[in-house]
Image (cartoon, helix red, strand yellow):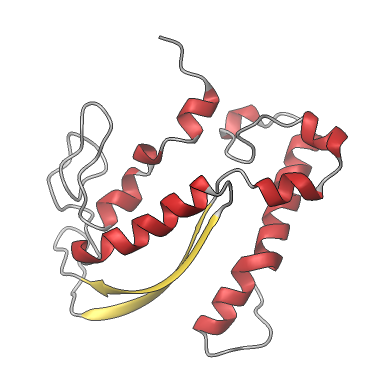
Length: 167
């Protein structure tokens, strides 16, 4: 069986830490226990958010991926007790999730010549795949573009409509 980078990068099952944070079981083989990021970890070890809040969050992740865009999701999540991490639950956390997927909008905004030089799964490269200044430069431009286009506004609104966010 041949595993290409594209298959690896676009598999939501690989988001093991996100799944675990919401107390979800893994979907890789072998599967992780609910709330664990790997098969050898005890169930619930990494659960920090109320599991019942996962479906709404996850549907937004899936919608973004299906639309060929990165997911920028702002939400308020219930924090649960986690002895392993020393977290006392019972409160709400405001979070802006930025989950990077290939972006059709970004691809269409760059020169065709540049786009042709990038793998279809860009920017979801393994660190070892980025070997040239060109690749690192485009990844940096993507991060800046996404921050300016979506992330800064969500953070600003989360902080009470702060007009300038310095990150």
